[in-house]
Length: 347
Image (cartoon, rainbow, N blue to C red; front, side, top):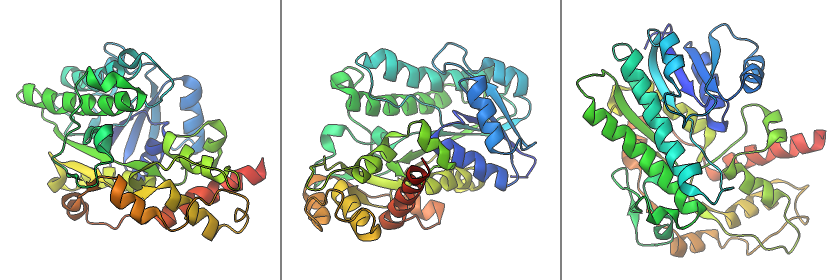
């Protein structure tokens, strides 16, 4: 790709997307982002020092019919790459179909429809930010003998995934991603773009801009924050699953743009498994100011807990395709927590 290539990033104000926007600008791309309001968009432009290669458009509700039409009417002839990172991610709902499933599917559908209508000849690549949630059903996550690969799919149906908020979120990722693959299959003759997906596990790592921590944080970062604020002798829920650093998620999007071998692939991002016990161990070992003031749980029992309580992820194919080393858990958590503590000290 040449440096005059224009990339559209949906949901550009999100945790992962801010890192992607930063990496794209550093690599010389022109970036058009979407955010939900003028206020959010203005704040983002200011954070990037009103970089002339960055502009923002408002897409208030990605689930609305024709949500992306205006953007592609206006910029369709410039945009070569589309990174669709926008998706609902919150558990504060009981109407799972209305608040999680339908918006995720419609958001994906509406961006692809807009490309077909206004940029069928110009958009060359679409990369959808999916999740490992699209690969495995939550109830299978604790099966120690199960191995998940790039070919795996979450087995829940539209109805069965509405059992609870976590299952519905995971279902929304599956159905949004399926929508993208099916759209391409059905419209192959009328669009020229190729498709890849990026499927990260729990995404930890520092915020692109530290002050984002003052305005609420993404769900994975919330796990670290809760453990930093845990009590001595306190109990914590031992979440476990595949993890990845946000900086690697961003980098993977750029590699997927630039490496032809990533075309048509699902890129599963995980640097192994984590559990909260391992995070607590890192916090106690690496931060003297926390030692003796936060929970300790059962030190060093993380690996044996994971062996029994988590399915395994084999993403060797992805690692080979991407060709770069991911951050390990210790470095990732240290950088995440250090930023949180710094912001806390300034408050």
